Image (cartoon, rainbow, N blue to C red; front, side):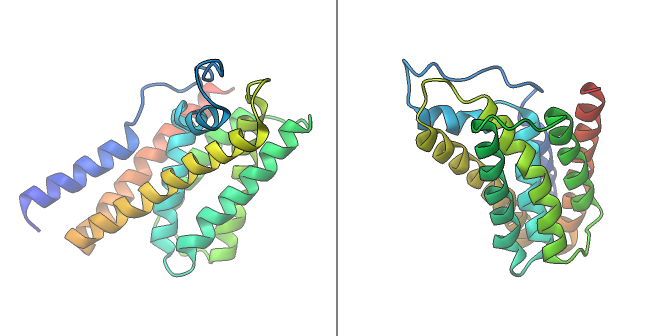
Length: 203
């Protein structure tokens, strides 16, 4: 592996874990200046917790390989929709922010450890956390937003973040499988460290 490629892999790891200095979600788009779809699209991108967890899901899917490449992201998205529906129906879930922060820690650790979990087990873990991510999206939906447009927006953003994790891992593996695994372990560790900080901040 050339020095240039090694530096590129390191830059990849840094970019995936330093996407935003903001922990919290600063708010939603004013629907007078945009659509419900745009509001939903932006919501997962306004918090580092959502971004890291969703990109890490893509990295985990790549690590497991095979049907996990689609099954892990799909399980997250379907459970997230369920969580959003619960919030829109007024159903309360406890400790939502803590669960979201913990998801960053746990999924980051699974990536860092290069886990050999079965696809159904990993999908169940990911889906359990996705329920809380979806609940947060649904809770913060603007009052005058179309539910369909808003949900479609956060599904699109989530799928894009999953895909970015998978594509980043694929790109790294094309350079060198040996070094890319090290980079993914480091990236998972950094994501887990961020998750630990996020979890601590919620208590």
